[in-house]
Length: 319
Image (cartoon, rainbow, N blue to C red; front, side, top):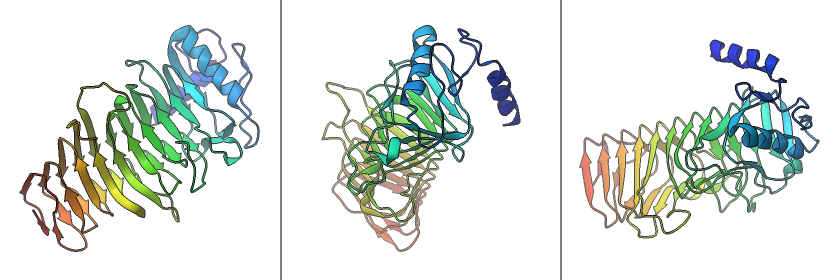
């Protein structure tokens, strides 16, 4: 961490050198034909930030954009069109919010299938309305992204993930709308040590909802993997709901994870649970599931549903 911090600091000292793809760009510095973002928790920084993103994309196809500590606000959706990485100083001190808490999608990642843009050490805050209709962050169809050490909070869905082959690691993702999901997925990605919990006092419909591909036709498998993830909190329906529209493509694996609410699998090719904790007594699957080495925390669970089951080494779980 120290080496990484020193590297970012050294790059910042040189970041005002225009036209060098090897150096990060500080979005608060006026350069490359772009104004500097103000980051004062009131000014609209949309034009400045989008200009810096576009500059890096147009000239180099990507690069690192550094967001020094501050509260940035945007009136419109910031679009990341390629391999641009938005890097803050930490999710507790660097944030990008919708201006005035409006129901606006703050970030959309639109890169090509080999882009791998993303964000790091930053917090994204969207509408806190229980009837919000826009997702907070949206990854477009087939786009791979890398999110690290980030917080996403608000909107109908915290993260609408239509991308493929992305990695989300050590993040907290929470929606605000009663009919939303912390993670609404129509893609295939990896998630490691990430919390899909509503913030205190908030209730949403799902922690994680998986649906069919965002665009059709698409004949590939929807392989989603969750490692040491947390699906706790208060939900009006389920912690996890998987329905791939009977396409027989959704393959989902949960390892070392925690669930506090019901898990319902309506249509999928296969769902695998390995070494997880179930806090609810409801586990229903109408599709094939595998349960190995899991534990029912509060009371014994009898798995229901019409799907094929393979079970071994579980505690207080009857298949």
